[in-house]
Length: 220
Ligand SMILES: [Fe+2]
Ligand SMILES: [Fe+2]
Image 1: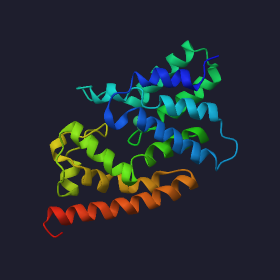
Image 2: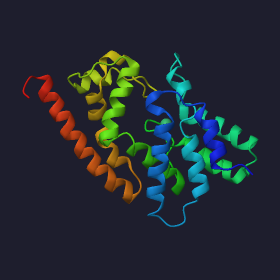
Image 3: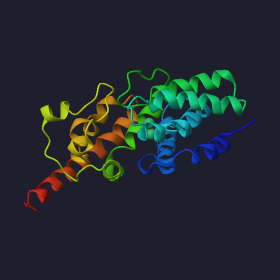
């Protein structure tokens, strides 16, 4: 029967976006294992497969001009096909589908199984801390966002589409992403271990963006 490394090889060829590349997937994998080690009864096969496959449709969402592709929904379908081809049991496949469908921050479906909660937590942790700062700027570069933009809540809300995606990327920036999304990540986590890691990572980001604002304003 196929194993995790077979799945990793397949995933490698499908991830190309630099902020959601194989390195992101493998960091999430490491974080998921770290969290799982603090909880009893986690199905490590389901968690491992779901983690490796969770962003498989990300490139398709990023390159979709219509804004209708949801990488969590499409990714779950693609993962299911891959695992069927590799002869994984239907029970495992269904559990993996649930994890992938519910991992997206702006999605409507919430994780119910412990494996889905761990994947969701691990994925969000990779968006904060020093890695989070780095990734926020990588994503900004991919979309042509400015380095810094003064945050105005009203202005921001007019720049969001119904499906939660950004309308005009030149009106968005990493510090706005921190203000509206990243700093609230600790409130959206399920596991105690992830909450502990997140608290410290967000404190670091607060300091970074405060300092950035000072330099932008010529005060440092
Ligand atoms: Fe994702
Ligand atoms: Fe991810």
